[in-house]
Structures are given as structure tokens and as C-alpha cells.
Image 1 (cartoon, helix red, strand yellow):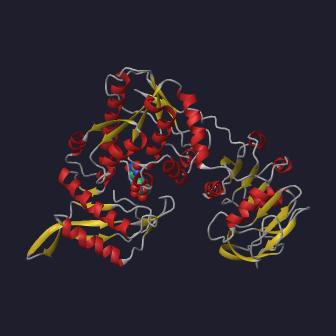
Image 2 (cartoon, rainbow, N blue to C red):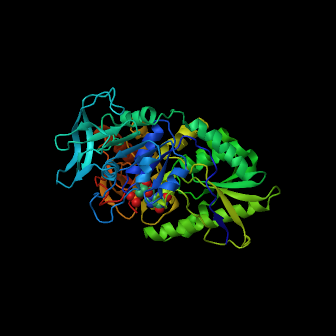
Image 3 (cartoon, rainbow, N blue to C red):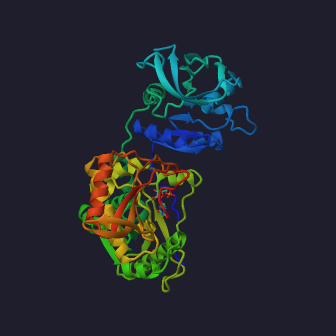
Length: 530
Ligand code: XMP
């Protein structure tokens, strides 16, 4: 069995790192992204990390995130006072603010004075470090049960709300700042400005971090890691693997071989984009494996979604391993690296910061030596999705690849409800292409997260077309808006766009006589139908 061991994060020096201490929930990732939008490099650390370890990272500033706990709850995360005494500027938000207040001797009451959602904030110190240049009345996003009634000694109260007397405070001398609300969410109208005031004015950090720096740093790190050996990268057609491959290609050129498994489950034009446009843009060595027949054979007679997924996953690994074996047998330097498009959220979600997904090959194709271990090259492990797109753009990748919406690995195989056959795939590809074309023409690509187009192959309904009765299949449109695919809402698309898609699909796609719209949020519905 071949396996891949995760490499340590490339040793990239980020002299201006801001640490975001994660107190739970989803806030820390959003804060880290906002810091980077302010062109300052940020990393997330768990609240359980000892303060000494945080300080050893030599952060230029530390941000304490919000979290779901009450500072009074049993077992609620705490903070070592030493964090506030190290001379590093600190910004507490929501739970982080309350923790800062209680740790430093202020008062936080469990008064039942709750505030949730949009709340008017009254700024009492307009010239303060955080609030300078922002309106004295502004809308902020609150989500708390406890309230701070007295700031710690040495702190100036800079804002309040109708319910909370201390909604923001600062101690400029010690470089400690806090707000009760969530400046990272867009509903806080001046949130980004306040965060930037903390970073630039409070902590004195220069906004100099860009995706351009990332490319330079990563190219150097990849060269150092790979040396004169060879690397393999699997391309899926998605953004992450394409950008990772392009970055590695820039670093090591012909030492990289990309592998694209054409499983026949891609959408119209996508395989050609990889084969032609990606190669033209990067000059990468690409090995395309045409495995369409193999996948169709393996999927014959199978309707159950999970069985389909298993079959597609299994066949994919077998084909990919076969391709690996062929590359290993080619003349040239040792093949020792496998490139993966792992992103920062994958790393944070799989335990935060140090460990990474350990992608193993599950099947032995026979002939692949048992002891082959690839070291992973993961040049995107510091980046969020929007940053990956920016890097891709700077590397000159085609817009269609860089801006591609999420698409499931098993492809159209899980968008045919029923058995997957060549005819059905072709039919769905046509319908999907029409929907994509019209959504793009209407300028809706950025507005929707993704729009699965689903063929209900096991369903037929009666219709009438031309001068005859039809008995065709329905196509389902599933446009959704979402932040992260964990939850989603159905997109309220303009009727004219829906009408155009429906008319075109029923006119242009044989055997489809009905188009229906899925108006279910997630939960309870998932985004995909299978
Ligand atoms: P669901 O349907 O679970 O989808 O709401 C959430 C997101 O994940 C994608 N998805 C998959 N991606 N393999 C993948 O790589 C899969 O088996 C798979 N199933 C769903 C889906 O497109 C959406 O973005």
C-alpha cells in the first residue's frame, strides 16, 4: 500500500503574524480572514495553547475571538493573565472582550441583559484608537448574554449600547483593546475599519501581506523541499488542485507531472479546460487517463448514492495509483512528493495548525511497491479559498478554473437519481451547460454558491410538446446561497432567468419535459440530491 506522510508546514517566515485565539464556534476563521483582508498575515491558535507557546511565535498582535460560552459557565475557557502582560497588543472581541475584562479586574455581570443581532452602538470617545473617524452612532452585531458593567483599572470606556454600559474599552498605554460585539461580521457597519485601526494604529503593523508574497515564499519553500526529485499532482478540475499544481509547476517546472483522471462524470467542457487551458497557462506535464468506460462499467446497475460514491472513490484511487506507477517507472529522478491542494480551513478543522489530513491510498493496484511513501507538498495550507483564487489569478490560470464553484468529487454520478449511464450523463451535461450559461449571462455566478442540476432518471411525467404526448424526465435546478456549504438557503433567482433556463432545457434537451426548482434550505435538505 502506498501512503503519503504529511510534511511539516513549509518554513515560511511571516514576521508580522497576528494570532487569533479560537474560543470556539466559527468566529476565529472569519476574524483571521478579515485580518488578511487588512493585508496582515494571521494564524489561528486554539485557546488551550499555553500562553508561552503563543508568545514563542513572536506575534505582532493577538486577537481573542468570540465563543459560545458565558464567562460564568463551568469549564468555560480561561486565559492566563500573562498574555496581557507580555507587551503584545491584544484585541478582545465578544467572549474575548469579557474574558479580558474579568481577567484584568473589571466586572462582567450575568444580568440577563441579552443582546442578539443588529444593535445601535453609541461611541463616547470619538477620537479613540479604535473609533477614530467612525460615526458616533453605528450599527454593530451583538451576541451575548453577560454584560460588562465596569472596565478594568486603567481602561477608558469608549462605547456603550442601550443595554450595556461598557461595550468597548481601551488601554492605549498597554495596547489592550476590546469590543463587546463582533466587528468581523458585515452587519457591524464599521467593523473592518475598527479592526484595521487596531492592527495599524494600536499594534503599529504595516499592511504589507499580499498573495504576491505568498507566491514568492511558496516557490522558494517548494524548491527547498523538493530539491532535484520529482513530484506528482492529481488534478480534479477544481480550483484548489489547479492552483496548487500551478504553484508547484512555477517552482520546479518539469520535475512535476500532473495526473488527470477522466472519469466521464465531469460537466461539459471541464475536461477540455484542464487538458488544454490549464496546460497552456502553466506549461505543466499532464498525463490524462481516459477511464470513462471503466467507471461506467463499475457503475452499471447501481442506484444507491453511497454505493455510487464508494465505487467512484475506489475506481479513482485504482486509476490514480496505476498512473503513479507508470510515472515511477519513467526514467528520471526519484518521485518522492505528492502535491495536495489542502487549504487552511481543512487544517484548522482537522485539529488546528500542526497536523494535516493524511491522504492514504487505500488500494493496491498490484505492482506498486509496498514501501513507497510520498511526502506531501501542500503549498496552500496557509490560505483561505478566496486567497487561493487570487493566487490562481496571479499565476495566470483561466478564469473558468479560478472562479469555479464547488463541484463534488463524484461529479455528475451523484446528480443522476438512478443508474448512471452514458446517455443519461450526456443528457445531464447538456441541461447543466444550459443552466450554467444562463446564470453566467445573467451575472449571477458570484451571487450563488453553486447550482446543482439534477436528473431524476427514475421519474417520468406526462407532457405535451409539438403535436404529441411526451413521457420524459424532470430536471431539478438547485441554486443555493451559502457561506461554507454547512448551511444553505435556496437562491431567489429572478423568474425571467428561471423561465429562460426552463424553456431552453425543455426545448434543447431530448427526453426532458419538465424543469422544477428546489426551494428547500439546508437543513433539512442537503445541497446535493444524493
Ligand atoms: P451537501 O450535499 O452535503 O454538500 O449539502 C455540501 C457540499 O459538499 C459537496 N459534496 C461533495 N464533495 N464529494 C465531494 O468532494 C462528495 O461526495 C460530495 N457530496 C457533496 C457539495 O457539492 C456541496 O458543495
